Image (tube, rainbow, N blue to C red; front, side):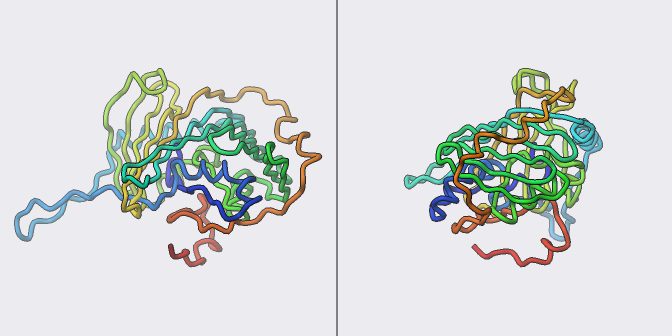
Length: 301
């Protein structure tokens, strides 16, 4: 559940050549569910009577309780691994949208270790962070970029976004405080009901929205782990849909220290972290907000 703004609907950024080859899978993933320009849930309309007040958006206590429980479960995890299959729609020449998918195997150890292996569709990519440096590796192209990184997962992910437009649609799951990502600007939250289909377990369905995105999330009724997230974004006039399916959860399992680096990249051709030439999709922005990022003007599209 990229719980606040699942950012990044990057279509294939073809202009950056080697950079595109190195970072395309990560951008695809960003594409999946995050920031196609955010689409806001429609506020309740007025009753139609002249002068009647529009009903205020609702924050249902049960929905908030379920979201907070999921965020607490994720935040409390010392180690975590899961598989994220992200699907995103892209317009076709005929009109109806096409669907593209990526699959990422994610492993982390708080506060400063992360590995993301993106298998496809699109070029495979590997991202490693060990608390001191971050590395993006394209195994098929044998290209690698390495850079110093801050001492937290959030800081490393923000650096990856700022320097190379790398974003993962599950970023909100791996930050230290997922609830803050949801609560910031939350305008609407309501409980839908339960499902016995999604993820093979009983889940609670919750919808929530802010000024950028309307999301529906399926959260395990017993284990409080997210199983699926769907999103639409306010700025997307095409109303394209984005989805992340989450499975194979392992919480607080022992993780070998050597998984957060790659020996395969030692012989790879080095290149610098750099932003692809193609413009990022509308609405793409880092999850972790800071004064510096807030002061930066948004790019026009």
